[in-house]
Length: 210
Length: 210
Image (tube, rainbow over all chains, first blue to last red; front, side, top):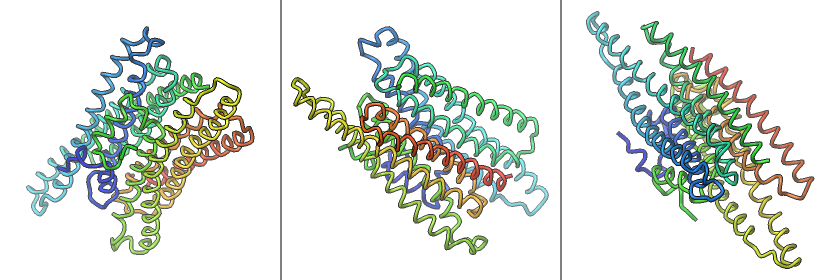
């Protein structure tokens, strides 16, 4: 497994740009989600310890801890996404000459496809949690840095939309129709809630900036 | 100057999350724009050399070169953004006790504010160029990787919206009203064109995925 987070930023971008199969879109979306989180954490850190924001300090400390936890979750999901992708590619290579082989391959494929669907869903759920944090932070965070709460909101929503494309690729090949229905329903909810939270946060950010 | 691109991805995210003033939202948006570019480049690299895509190969090679050029431009803009931010912070610290000092400070501030406005504008223009590349790539790139063209589109548009918040912060303090009018007009055009390109690319991506 490529140790992306120990590699230099330059190397990670070049590796992503290359024809290497990983990191692909799911992992890169999760990296950008971590960067979105870093902007929310920065706003928290620039609010904590400031006299003017003493009243909200305790809550902002909690929001920072939640955000840092989310960032490390995104990092784990980058590795999980690369592992799931490799597993799926290996499964496609399984033999399918006899009916027995074909049956075994189909079952393994169904499982691998679900795995490769769950990981982007987890990233998207993380982006939504981040957007909830930003929504709470936008009205109370340090006004001097509040545009960066807006940066967090835009990048988190963009990462959520991007990572869900990796659900869209796998869904048509999954046979378990109930699973597919549930995933599609959750996907629509994630998108709708993310958009609403982004717009509300940005409204507050623009007002406090103006 | 922090050599962000030589630092590990982990360190860059942690530094962004800290209360250190740089990298801030402008730089982090440019980093995500570079990651968006990496996904467009990957789609090009997975298209080039494939028999099935022989007819479009030459054009895709050009698109890849343009994309790699854009990625290195985003990298330079990350450093430029940090430098402009530091310059602006230093300018705010200039003495303003006498009318002479105040006048000198005001002039230096006007210049620093314009500098800190130009850099995010350059990043946003780069995101728009990337969206034009994705728009051209979406119908001709390797179908097997086409979801990643969609990832590029979502991340590029999110980065464009995010980075333009750094225009919004500085604009109210700039005295040159003609400059402000021109910047606001360009900003609106960038946003509108980016949204249109994103939606068109995503439409093609979804169709080719389905």
